[in-house]
Length: 194
Image 1 (cartoon, helix red, strand yellow):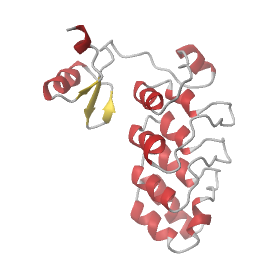
Image 2 (cartoon, one colour; image 1 turned 120 degrees about the vertical axis):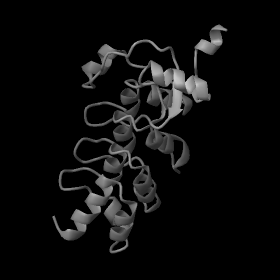
Image 3 (cartoon, one colour; image 1 turned 60 degrees about the vertical axis):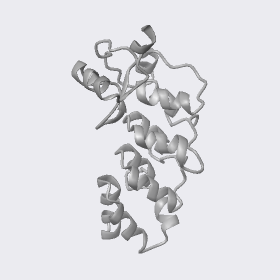
Image 4 (cartoon, one colour; image 1 turned 180 degrees about the vertical axis):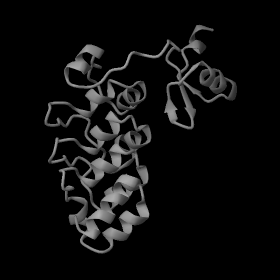
């Protein structure tokens, strides 16, 4: 791997927009953002996989195809951000960037980003808010298409909280109580019972 490639890919993986921009300025940025790594991943797909929203925005601004598919596995940036549960990147790809990312592109294993979203309350909610009208896959269906499914945490209702991790289900009961006390609760089903 030459020094340009090494510095560029390090910036993508490490989330250094400054390094990525510096490397893009040394060549044809449109060609660079469309060129896969030696192991077949696109820059935008990798930045999304690692949750680097700043690099995702930069790559799209420099001409990366929002729905570009990795030669290695056919994954798009939305597949990668969704499988890693990077809500801010998913939110950007579905609602802010222009053009918006497609929820219905299949990877090489026949899975859509929406399939991956079914494994997470947060990303599933974002897909539904973006207009996805398909049915959510069951845990068994998710396992059958190769997605790891962990048992759900103890029931805390359908609460989502706004905190250090962004918008997410609470990690434990203390985070749930803390969020309620500060008013950082989104979609709390306890309020409906009152």
